[in-house]
Length: 114
Image 1: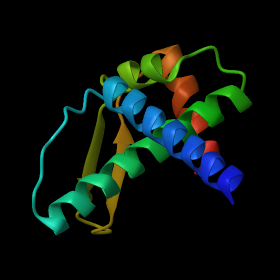
Image 2: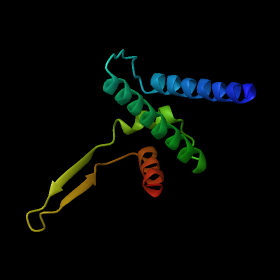
Image 3: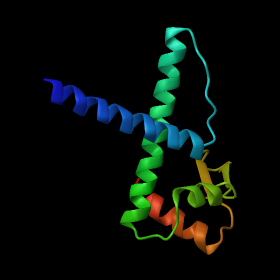
């Protein structure tokens, strides 16, 4: 039993470190909440951000794409998408505006894994 508790505590420290790293990478600042639903929402959002971060890291590594998650996040800041609705079809259509080679490669990797 004591070994199991120590093992679980180690897991907790790893999760807390991961969340702390992601908060730094995603520039999430600490927020103090006192209401239960706000605390739960903050934890949920932090966990979701961490999950997205780790999945992007996994996808980049699997594709052997020479980009860090931080750099990938940075280059997505300049990818623009236009949504239009043509009068004939009334169906929305999304068009990604001109991208450079790095952005195109990143988009292809992400779209392949969706």
